[in-house]
Structure formats: C-alpha cells, structure tokens
Image (cartoon, rainbow, N blue to C red; front, side):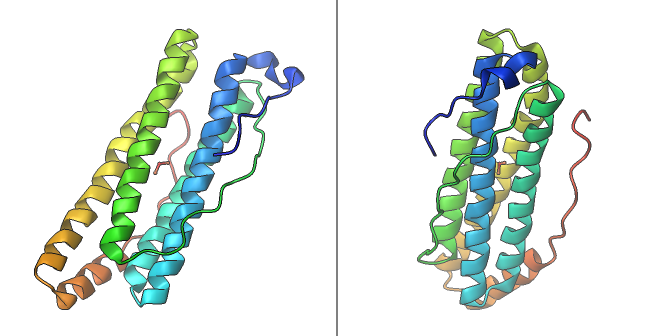
Length: 186
Ligand code: FEO
C-alpha cells in the first residue's frame, strides 16, 4: 500500500480528517483488490479455466464497486476522494488452490482493515461513518466465506487428483453473473 497521503485541509471541511484519510486509504485498498482479482482472472484464463476467470473478473467488478461506495460516501460527507498509486498485484500462481489461498488471505487482511476503520470511527465519535461501515463488516463475512468455500473444494479435488471435478467446478464458476450493488444507504 502506498504511504499515507495528506488530504488537503480545504477538502476536509465536512468530516473528521483522520477518518477521511483512512477512508481514502480503504478506497486504494479496494482498488488494489480489484487489480489483484483482475490479475487472477487473466492468470486463470491462461490456464484454460475460463469459469474461474469469469468468477474473478466479476469479483474485480465488485471490488471496484466497494471503492466507489466509499468514494461516494466521502464526497457526500463533504470530504475529498484522492486517487493514489495502486500497487502492482501478484500475477502468477502455482495452481488454482494457490490462487484461492492468496484470495482468502487477502480477504482476511481486508477484514482487518475494515475492523480498524470501525475502531477509528468509534474513537473519533464519527457515528455516521461507523454506521456506513456496517455494510462492509457484513460484506467481509461473505467475501471470506466465498473464498474459503472454493478453497475447500479445491483441496478436496487435489486430494482426489480429480481433473474432472476441477472441470465441473470451473463450469459452476462460469455461471456467476454480476449484480450491481444496492444503493449506499440500504
Ligand atoms: Fe472489498 Fe473483497 O473486499
């Protein structure tokens, strides 16, 4: 993640500056997640697992939506969303299981970032931000569960050395479709 960048004082008129800065860092983290999953999508495609590639591409779109949700919130509060450098993601994995181990570890890291943000909103008495972040707290439960479930399936497949089972899972993941997010305050 890039170094903490100061948000201009003029932009911070509507909200707590520490919270504004931390939310900006989370926008960067969500865009980095999108970048990581696009990278995985491309890698899966190169291995012939088009269903996995589809699943990760949609995951990347959801991560972009997470970034935009925070972007819109910062602006609604009178703050300023500042775009900063996005770190290059990993681009190669040993196999599908290795990729989903990366994904689960990444989502667990994002969960801790969200929890830190909630802690900050409490210590800064920014209750509106705390309320806003509850959507992300719930979303992270689903994000970790998705990655964990697929990882468990991949572990079973590798134990049974089942190329046919991998093909079936690939077909299942090919069926994922993109659903745009609900409005921010729902
Ligand atoms: Fe935006 Fe996958 O967490």
